[in-house]
Amino acid sequence: MLQQTDPVRRTSEIEELTNLYVIHPVSGWLTRHFARMGVAPNAVSLFGMAAGALAGVAYYHVGDPRFAVAGFLLMIIWHVMDGADGQLARLTGKQSQTGKILDGICDYVTFVSVYVGLALALSALYGAWTWALVMLAGLCHAVQSAAYERQRQDYNFWGWARGAAPVARAKVRSGRRMGDLLFGLYSRLEALTAVGGEAGLNQRLTSLLAAHPDRAPVIRTVYREAFAPLLRGWSILSANYRTIGIFLCVFCRVPLAYFMFEIVGFSAILVMLLARQRACDAAFTAGLDGLDTDLPCPAGRRRDQAAFVVEAKAPVAP
Image (cartoon, rainbow, N blue to C red; front, side):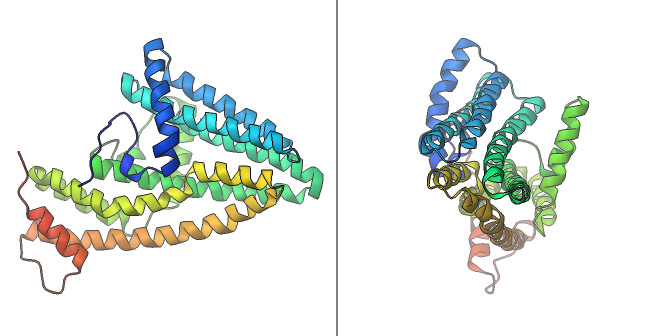
């Protein structure tokens, strides 16, 4: 059974490996110090954004490997602060919609700065056409990141009852016009990557949890066991691998290779992940049938569905 031992950190069983063993342990150490010092989570976000913007300046010097190392280290600082701001907000109870929007803005500012720095350098070397390549890569990046974040949020809600329901997330407002505009744009971007059949699964889980609140712990446990392996696969689209990829390509003096892989490679991976997610959603939705009917598992039911019915019928420990 998957267990989440630290409610301050992100959901560990679906976390990307470099986050789990490097970034977030450092973020956690800093979080405790920030809390004692009274540092606001938004201040941590802004510090991380400043480091990310400076990474763009470093990567502008695309022909010098020393600046590639500097850019990589500055992006690592951004990653650490990006982990610390959320942990600090949860630890101090200062979570807010504005903070969430700011965190997303900081993420985009970092990569926009790096992409613009590289585009300026590459256009001087190869011509203005590189701007079109970088802009297309940036658009693909935005769609891929939104898709990954959507799956993370769905998992946290259905698996751990954290955050807002998928439908409710699109309706949340910060009360500030600019914040609401940015949040609306991001919600629309997320909607572009909605998996076919996802709405049916969400409705099914909502009605099932409402009808059987006593079985909620079992339902959520089985959900985590079914979807956690898939979510670990989604982590290939996390910012960490882009940070590593940018550094390696710039250090090896083939920065164009990164943008080409962003457009072709990561996009192909997204298509495959969406197909796997659709199949998993469909199988899990079908496996929910036994809960409402309380019928024995049919002999023809697939193995993953049968396992779900057996687990769901197990008594819930007091």
